[in-house]
Amino acid sequence: MIFLALMTLACVGLLFFISFKMGTMRAKHAVPAGSVEGADEFNRYARSQANLIEGLMMFLPSVWVFAYFGNANFAGLLALVFVGARTFYHRAYVTDPAKRGRPFMVGIGTTALAWLGALISIVLHAL
Image (cartoon, rainbow, N blue to C red; front, top):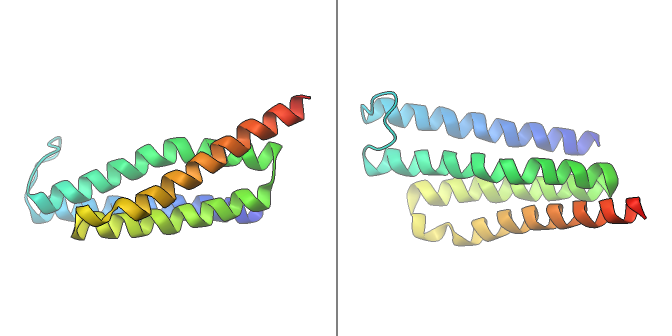
């Protein structure tokens, strides 16, 4: 569980970093607070941040339920892969959005595995 806890903090750290970068893009492109659209560069940073938030909302509960009812070590490994994939996803999205496909698939794959592992573990635990 300690490894998964550290990887969870890495997920939050990644969100801090991307949020900070998005804020710097807001200032750079003079996008006023409350506005969600601006220069293309700002839009890419904003979408990358929003996509990470959306991904974390699915991933974190799934991976923790899987760790609790199933396998904490495998859950931690999934979290490590998720952080790596989302880091590459962000980098691809802000430089060339057309290249974000592979890291997206790895990230959503880890989410699917965590969710499926959680579901199977709960069912097995209930039996």
